[in-house]
Amino acid sequence: MYANAVFTLSNKDVNQLHREALRDVERVVLTLDVNGEARQLLVPSHKTLLEVLREDMQLTGTKHGCELGECGTCTVLIDGKPQLSCLLLPIQLQGRAITTIEGMANGSDLHPLQVAFAELGAAQCGYCTPGILLAARSLLEENPRPARDEIREALAGNLCRCTGYTKILQAVELAADRLR
Amino acid sequence: MAAELGPRAMFVAGGTDLFPKLKRRQFEVDSLIGLDFLPRAIRNGSDECVIDAGVTLAHASHDPHLNERFSGYAEAAGHVSSPPLRNAGTIGGNLCVDTRCNYYDMTYEWRKAAGFCLKKDGDICLVAPSSPRCWAVSSSDTAPMAIALGGVVTLVGASGERELPVTALYRDDGDRYMAKQPDEVVTGLRLRRSPNTRSAYVKLRRRGSIDFPIAGAAVAVELDGDRVESCRIVLSAVASYPLEAKAAEEFLKGRRLQEDVIREAAEIASRPAKPLDNADLSHFWRKRMVRVVVEQALARASDQQPGLDG
Image (cartoon, rainbow over all chains, first blue to last red; front, side, top):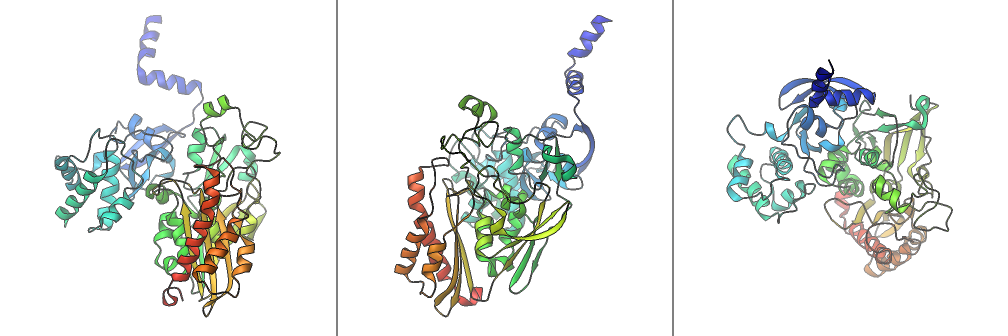
């Protein structure tokens, strides 16, 4: 009996459930449209979209950065527009289309932006890349022929701390050319 | 609902100011009341524009009518923070954005180590310890512009609906910076103009892509021919409320917007600005730069073609 209890508590998920139950965490049932798929989830109401994507849906392509809305690495698209998942509550997003980096490729075919980023080496450590790709995709859907300054403006909320932005800008321009 | 829940509840619209502050325990609440159900439309008239408070800053900054007729307001909305935050943040939220201070906008652990301040958990102002009040800085970009354009907000609360000029929405107190009741929600903003109104907003910040203002100038000039009939100059981020430069407004009346007049008006406008050492960069430099941003904003407003804005 005691051994069973130890075994049960050593399970990570159950352990977390126990901790949350002890803290009396309020949970809600939500239906989220993520990458075109309706997903029903039971999650604590205070969790941010970033936490739900990464911890409850295992969509870890969305990166966890500053958590305060400054770095842009957690960018996802909400109804096609870039927003920061660290500052969104899933409870406010029911019925809205959420796109993460996992929804960018079409099966095994990468999005032209992903191809251009890989070809030009527009990523160094890659931590900012998912957010930048999604912000760039939103830009190209609205404006297929962006000028360099328009690309800069659209990516202004996404910080890259490895290197400069030149290759990133070039890759967006290359993808825009190929998409036309 | 807010009236029932009292101070342990807060409203949330875009959440771009609120959520970071909840994470840093600058706000501690039990409940959040979402405002997603409020309408989000811009209703344009020829000389008037009514913007629902739930309209996002991105929507306002791209709206063709606002850009044509209330260009200063569209500019101010387009200068708030960064693009992903403008897609979430609302114009009502930016009017109510919390005042900022280097000793307040820090993590809980930092504030605990440094000693809590008057605005949250403490009893003295760490910027001016001998002062009985909080000196946190008004950091809204759209509020000064809304004041310059004679904006009026609609407030809805438990006791009904009322209208208030934007200028009366703020108090000269960094802690209790808003004059509205806690259970009242800003539901809309009405801007008015005459065919001869020109407006412009110039913002100073460390990084052009994201930061809060450390100085800014919102100007709305009404011209009679080539002379100024009336004018409003409102400064951002140099006091606990959007500061109107009344002496400079008086000085400009009846004058032509020429280079030397603009320079003198900017000098006068910068006098009431007394930034303290509680925001980004040096406060001496910020004080000097107030003159520059006012000069640039007036020059921009005077350059606008009558056909564009008329």
